[in-house]
Image (cartoon, rainbow, N blue to C red; front, side):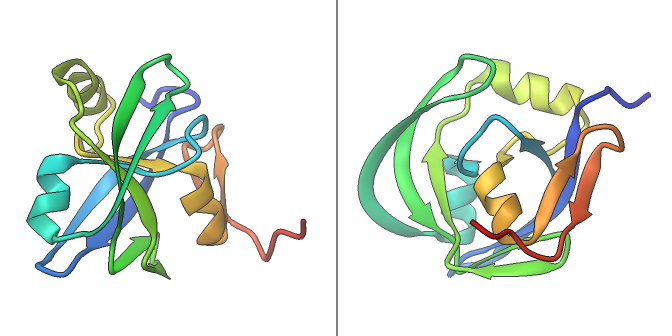
Amino acid sequence: MRRLGVVKARVVLSGFKGSRECTALVETGAAMTVVDREVAEEVGVLRTGRRRALISAGGHKLEGEGVAFRELSVEGEVLDYEKALEVELSGEVKEVLRGLGVDEHVIVGLATVELAGFIPDTAAGKLRKVEAFLL
């Protein structure tokens, strides 16, 4: 049974040591993509040295370091040197992600989704391709 409002996407996180393909939660309330430290180290990200803090839509405070993937692919659309926030996700957050049927190490933010040319379709639970955003 699909939960209303939950959007999932196929992503490939490619670093300088390897890559990881998974189904990730698209968090419409998150400005940027969040990756657990374990996966960031596994694939080999580029570190920025900048510390950041975010508050998720669910009220969780996430603190970590800004990183960049060599490539981040969302539903087949490749973004070069896409930025993310590397954090140590809590057991509670990982449990919620597992319960949603998504990878427990990655949460895709809205900025990443939009850069890849998609918008979240919360009724269908997936991303919808759009032509372009004009600001």
